[in-house]
Image (cartoon, rainbow, N blue to C red; front, side, top):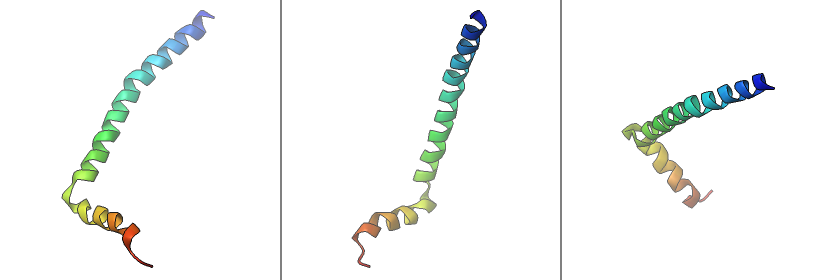
Length: 54
């Protein structure tokens, strides 16, 4: 039973630490992609698409 608690504690600590770092890295990548100037035309086209007639 004690080994199971140690395994859980290790996995929980690992997930909390590395999960946060991976999330922060992914968020940073999405932020860079969304704010880079070359993506502006793609986002403008996507914003206008619901208003266009078929």
